[in-house]
Length: 154
Image (cartoon, rainbow, N blue to C red; front, side):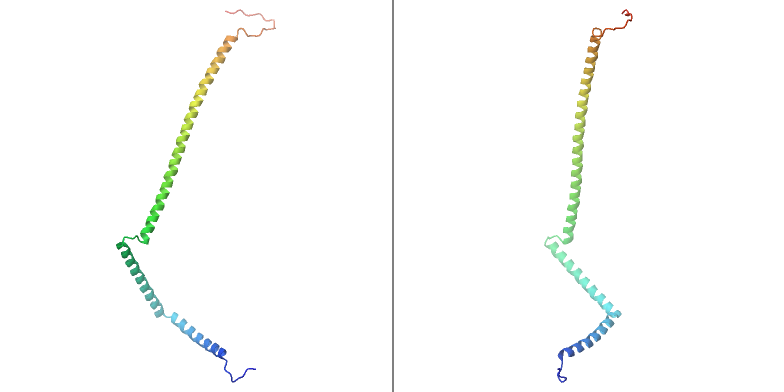
């Protein structure tokens, strides 16, 4: 079936991969565990942060010279605009409340005036009824059917 004299490239490649993977894995784990490697990473990180700071300062200087706002300035203006919008909304609500209160007070005043007029009319009606009752009371009294003696009027 398979000829032992033939070389299998796949099995050779697999064997070589397994041996190198083991060796590289051990070397990498050893290197990652050393303090010198951590110091090197710290130095690389510091170098990158210094480079990033230099680029930021250079960009800010360029933008200022070109009279173009920076990201921070735009963010600050956006924050100020949002605060201003909130204040305007608050004032608008207060004005609406004041307008509503003014309208309510006007309505209450109108109702008080109307009630005062109605009260005067009711007093006039009551006076007219009492005057009318006083005028009609001697002539409209029903005759008494009892045997009581009439009392003389003075």
